[in-house]
Length: 382
Image (cartoon, rainbow, N blue to C red; front, side, top):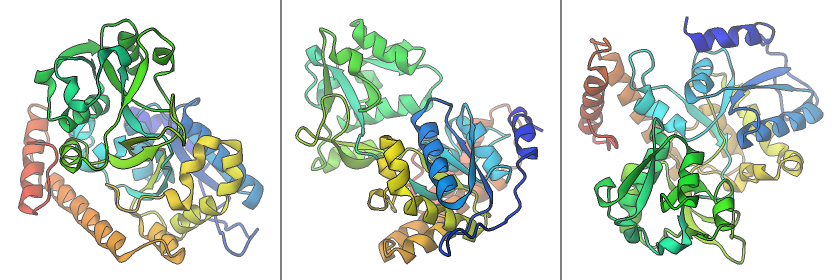
C-alpha cells in the first residue's frame, strides 16, 4: 500500500459513505456525506470547495468533507481507488489522463478521469513581463531571460507554450533556473529575468509596484497560427478574455488564454446518479456560494467549457443535457476524448516490461505509436 493511500485511510474510515438520499428537495438527492480532495488549505481551490460545502449543508443537509492534498497524485489516486468521491483538481489532471510527465512511472501511468464541471474564471493565464523589458509581442521574447522552475513540468510547459506562440523555443532565450514559482517572480523583480507566466489574479502585484513595472502579454485570438503553435505544446490552453487581475478590468480587458480551475473530476465507475446530482446541486446553489467566495464565479452554467481536453462523466452529461446546454458537437468531442483515453489505457496495459530502468522512454514510445496509429495527436513526443 502506497504512502499517500495510508495517509488517507484514517480520515476515510470514519467517513465511509452509505448512500442515504437527502430528501430536502425533490430535485437534488445526495448522500449525507460527500468527499472531495482539493489543493492545500489557503488555496483558491480549497476556499471555493469549502464555500460550496457550506451551501450544500445549508440547502440539503449534506456534509462535504474537503481533504487537502499537496500534489496531483494525492488528489487523484484516492478518487480512482474509490476512497474519495471527487477531486477539485487543477490542470495537472490533463497530464494524469495522458500518462505523461510525473505520471509516466510504472506505479502510476495514465488515469481514467472524467469531468463533472469546472470553474472558468474571468482571469487568465498570461505572461507577465517587466515593462522595461519592452516585450510587446511574443516574438519580442527572443534574447530575453526566462525562468525555468526546476522540478515543475507544468510551469515549464506554460512558459514553453508562450515561446511557441511567438515561434520561439528555449534556444532563443536565456534560461534562468529558479527553485519555485515565487522565485521566478522574485528574479524579475531583481532584474535577473524578464517574464513569467501567472494567473492574472495570482501574480505580478509586487512587480507592478516596482520601478520595472508589469505588463501582461496579449495573445490575440485572431492570431490563429500563433494559437495553433501554442496548443501543440499546451492543448489544455483555451482562449478567453480576462477582466480580472492586476491592471485589468472590464474597461481594460486582455485577450489571453487559460484553463479551468478548479476542475471537478471523478472516476468513470462513479455512480451516474451521484455525479448527476453533484452537478445539479452545485449549479442550483451557485448564487449562494458565490456570495461567500467571489473567486468561485467561474462555476456558473454559462462559464462551462464542454469541449476541453477531458471527457465528461455520463452522469454529468445527463445533467447538462437536461439544462439544454449539451450540443451534438459537445457529444462528438466527448466521444473522441473517451476513445483517446481508451487508446492510451490499452497501450499502458500492453506494456509488458514495467521495470524502472528506461521505463519512461519505453512508455512514451509505446504511447506515441498507439496514438499515431489511431490517427490522434500524440502531443508529447516519444
